[in-house]
Length: 206
Image 1: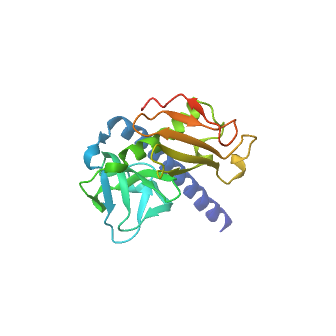
Image 2: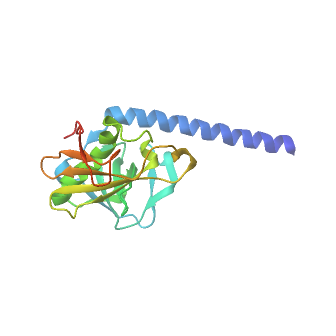
Image 3: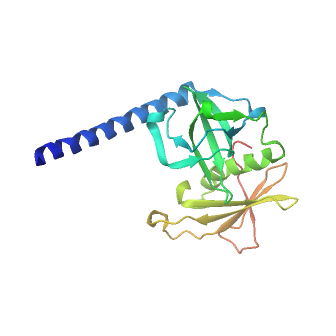
């Protein structure tokens, strides 16, 4: 009985390893062959009857069981491949979740991020701005972004540290990044007093 049980466990481990390899291979293939969506109508609504799970590659075999959306949630679509759409879902705290969703469970609203298009662009620029200007050595998964668009001149983003032992180091956080509306000029108070901002090198996507 013990030998049979151990053999069964070994088979499960091998099956999981094989699935992970297949998902990684499919993900790499999709990055080369995906079809990009029209940005003028890239807002999708979840129309599934229940939970719609994220996948880390365009296949239901690559499901991320801890990440899902519910009917009515809105996402931004970027590309399609193999019956799946690559999307980003933005949480209220500014964090985003990226992955692949079953295209058949999405409805194209015919809308874009419209007036908030520039705000979305700014949000997408933040990781590159941080890396290019060496504002912190922490990886993106250890950073939390709280973007505020209430100011008439600047998009204000407070960058703070996420929880987790891997996110502990000597870097000074939180700090603030300002992106000027229209021109997208970038400033930060990292390494200075909280009200003292210096000019930064912008992201290449500017």
